[in-house]
Image 1 (cartoon, rainbow, N blue to C red):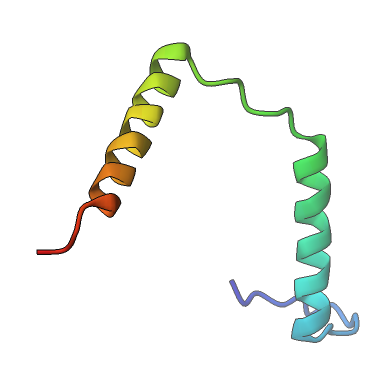
Image 2: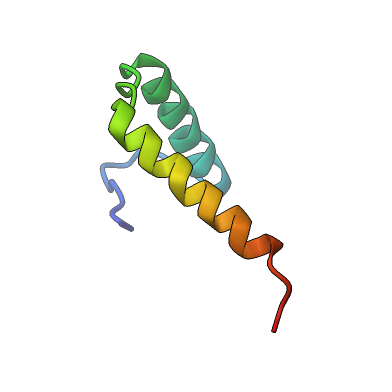
Length: 62
């Protein structure tokens, strides 16, 4: 994505471009609606995965 506008306007440096993109991203995050909550079943499955992961980490290494 290195397209440049060549209509005689001034070019901006990479740092300024990144700052503009970050600001646009922040505004989009603020304006977008939040994600819906997880279903109870999905939440239960995620908790089960966490529990199993914790059990695996607690086991001594072989």
